[in-house]
Amino acid sequence: MLFAVKMDVDLPADLDPEVKADTIAREKAYSQKLQRSGKWPHIWRCVGQYSNLSVFDVESNDELHDILWGLPLFPYMSIEVTPLAVHPSDINA
Ligand SMILES: O=C(O)CC1=CCC(=O)O1
Image 1 (cartoon, rainbow, N blue to C red):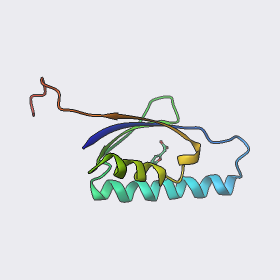
Image 2: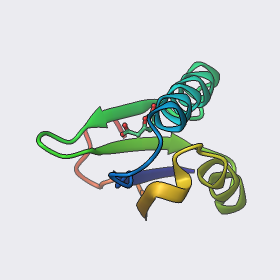
Image 3: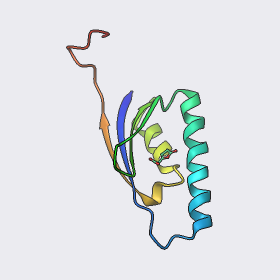
Image 4: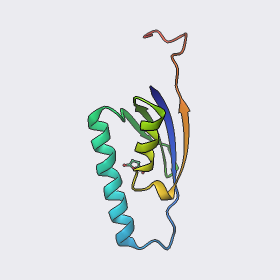
């Protein structure tokens, strides 16, 4: 199952710099592990925003939910999930 996920990050201005750096480092490691596994095949920066647009390839809604809840930056994110279906005009479908 494919999902497009937009993640908007909003870190508090007064967040301790060490906590901020550690959380971002853990987020990167978590994301890259999932990218290598094939569960997170695309991640793109949204130009001009502290946001990304990602594609997840997972077995179920519950699996995606667990992945998103596990994001170290999850407490500082707004997340919008869009389930994807094959487009009838897709020449690769
Ligand atoms: O910077 C972001 O967009 C948040 C994020 C998600 C995965 C990652 O490494 O950073």
